[in-house]
Image (cartoon, rainbow, N blue to C red; front, side, top):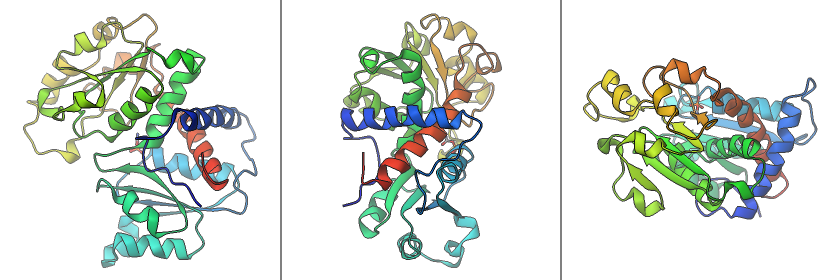
Length: 307
Ligand code: CP
């Protein structure tokens, strides 16, 4: 029986800890000169991306190569999707070529959940619409874990997530994962970019960013997703930065040495000022390295039957 990674909703603390501990070990491999391991030798990994990506796609590709898998990449623009082939037919075609792990990104929430039961390959959700982006949240949690030192220290950890909460699949996966680990999550942003009933997910909700950030251990900016929104949800990027951007003054409201995070890509000067992106508290590049390690861990565990 295969396992998939479609989201962090409902994933147990035990499984999260297993993934994070495996990823911590994988990070040692990522940071050494010789990154080659046989963990996925003989396996075939395919990435199928219907949306653009730099970090997620490249880190899955590098992770596959480091672990000795045969890896192939398909984008919607360069495939038979352009000739009208459906998502299901495309996935079944990839499966029929002997694929062991299919990593997919799609603009439709729930697309990986439709595909997973139809194919033998384990499916990893690399971001589906406004639903979830589980490996992003896992890499965010790995970065936090490495700084706080133990799983126990997630209990009561205060994480403030600021920005376009409405369109963000990153925030949803982070809320599910962080709440399971015992952290306390506050979300903040313009009321026009705040989903109705978000408090039902067990988070504190703020429109005043200063209040959300006050005393936080982690401050995470979210990208303004201009591609997913009709105009008019906020007045201008300059005003957005003034009221909702994280700058040095706002970051000082968090705990001293609070971590500054962002899933990327960052709109510099909008969600975060350049001073904080390049400042001492920024762990944005560490997140990118954690991304390769988390994807190695997830693929390795799935290739052995699950988490
Ligand atoms: N964070 C993230 O998903 O980045 P990409 O869109 O570059 O993959």
